[in-house]
Image 1 (cartoon, rainbow, N blue to C red):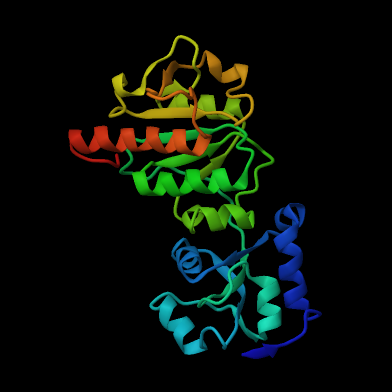
Image 2 (cartoon, rainbow, N blue to C red):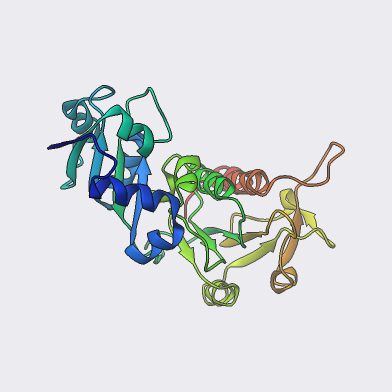
Length: 270
């Protein structure tokens, strides 16, 4: 274990650069994750930690590895000064750790037991916080996987990791074009529901107990024309003055409607 008190340390400098630059995260295949729960989920997800930073004023090395037990990591361990930790970490005054992590290709192969999957398809989610919230709800509701139709999306953005509370590491994610997503759905005989208000039916009246996918669009413009005629258009019944919801809120309601229907029918996951 090495002690670091300088922001000019090469490992610290790399972590700070990765925190701020999406292009660098993608080109180097590295990202930064923070938080004891998040890092434990990261290790459970099979990710490899390269550097692990902690401040002994907040947590000891013994406590840190006790938290991860029985999971193990071969990361280089660095005890850093409070000043360095304040630069690396978003949170302060709590037991915490920060790691530089090796990315994984987010290819998804349906598990053998997923005979009745449910997919959430998100088209160009604009805000990292919304994407993180989508992933958190997907994990909580038992959604099979999330398909992101946006080649520019950065699922390892620190705000995605933070707002997903680590669910970015537990939820299967596929990144593909709308055309690839449609082919995937057709090849696997998945019913498609789109959140487009035109001539839509209530999601409460749709059978989500069969293999299904629901498509949600951007905050500003909704779904692209490609998806508008792709399947059954659905809505969430509204009882107040507003006629729409934040994309992460709308998606959460739909995913939990899926969970409710499948639990009533005898099981959430396929």
